[in-house]
Length: 207
Image 1 (cartoon, rainbow, N blue to C red):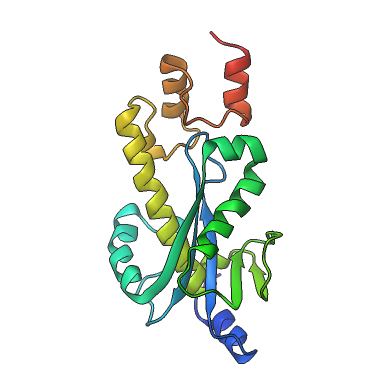
Image 2: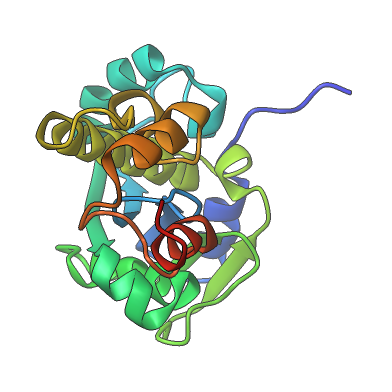
């Protein structure tokens, strides 16, 4: 079955309902063992660049090429939740916090949100749609997806320079074999999520 590329159907439906400022919202980094969770809210103010789709379907090179084009055609903002906040709140609530910070950082407040997934953050006060697989269906969410993914990956590359040996420059903190080997050799850093089972198990059973 051929998968259709993302389009502006959801955005147009919201605008037909009276919305003027429709933003897509997505997050990156729920699953990694290390690093923050990053969210982005994005609104297209000019035509989307060719090839824009779910960030997971794009290579790092293609995402990097899209970023300056997205910066030129979008109103967007980022939000993050730290490892400490992830451990204190849990990953779901930390993800909502990152989304809230992204939305609150926007120059123009939204009057309609298109949120990737099925989970609605409690802080949302304007009309919204939750869209499962939204980063592959809505161009606004796809834009947020690419921008958030690129920003988080760049942050993990920077952390990898401070903490070599975990492979963060290539695995972005996910639980790969290289990351596991780094943990066994170098131990747990302050950037690891201690509430996540593999890290908690290592701390409870050192050596």
